[in-house]
Length: 573
Image 1 (cartoon, rainbow, N blue to C red):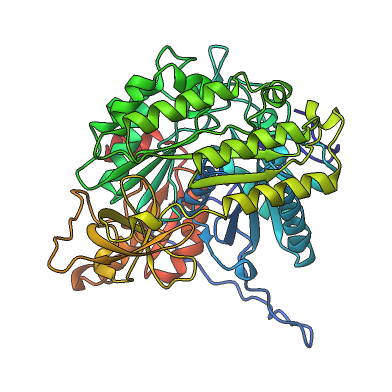
Image 2 (cartoon, rainbow, N blue to C red):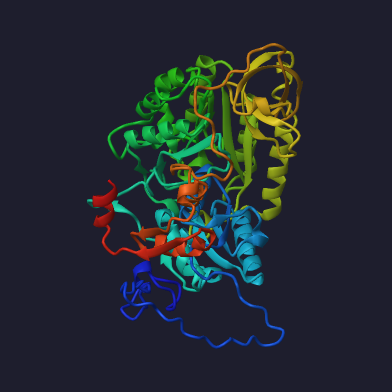
């Protein structure tokens, strides 16, 4: 896709020319010749000017990664952070310390894009380098405020290191193309890439990208495109690796998990049954959002899967509106009766199941009668998890061209639905119950650990380190709107899932966890090797640059670039 301006380059290969300097080759003198040191003139430093000591070698800087939006976007952000860390960059949680901000955007609603745009402005005011990623630049690459910025497309996250390298050097690069094989669109980047999990206990796996629908309000479709599913064997292998790294909870995500496999001759239940075989006792699987039309085809199978002890009895099924006329204008491809059929069937066959849903208030053409139907749906089902969204027209979507509901009316309907949602308490009747919960996270206020029961209902437990990542029995003694509080049962067994120890926070998944620097430092601690010279041969320029940056920390270590990669295969494999 062409750049927003002529100064932006379309691809990374455009950066390299025949006039660029190559790395200096190290020359070795003959044994009979002793090199004579050449006297150097002392460089005079102007008064008041500080020496510039920061390295300008790409791969040594600090990067701050900020992600907005859905769990699919979160997974992309984790993959980009992991690749950067594996390449030598330092990932920081402090934006002020960072040399470059990697901003991973969401295009679902206007407020999310506003936060993204404001972050770009803030970074530029602080003279930070900026690379943008996610659905906003993919769907709107010619947006004025993205001019001159480096962009990573949603299917190009496996090339994040190349883009950041060039951004560090002051270049602008845009990678927005789609990945295809034999003319067929692929799901995206490989699943076996390095990643840094935000929570080392939770692995987010995208099972497919894009969808089969064309909702009139949706901008994400412009970014993620049509459905493209990952093969079952790749997803199973990713889950298996995650459990080997101490993960105890897996989230399956995509724009529509229910549509999984339709493009590759399989379906969602087939994938879930294969994944269930890999889940160790004490670990759990959570299924992401699915639209009503696709889940309708697999209700019997889904009941059996959701009843499995290692699968949360939880399903996110967006209804968006209870008015069939509004659903038709949205091009949602189902009617409200379909949603009711799914909900009723699952609630009858999986007692206690949590059905989460989404509702848009003030969609173009929505009348008072349409909105009242939606209110009645919420009164009937009293959804414990309800995502209420005021309608925002997204540029380039058909809904943006429709006759809009007045802003004050959209706000009023949003307030009315929110008031209805907050008028009931879904968990009060559970006080006094004994539940088994999996502890995985810290609460927002850091006062509790967050656990979830079989129905993926949030239970706050005391912040005792021995509970983290464990299954524990608790007695429910308090309930709020969005949570319950549980007290661990005295003398009850704290069950540890049969998995490995989790990675440390910030540790890179999928890589050997002993660095080259650690190995050499360990070798130097051995007296016989303390003064032994070491020559490190590097198969590529990136490794060479990284080692040049750290070799000052190592005693008697030299680095050189070996141009023939087959040398390494023949010597060390």
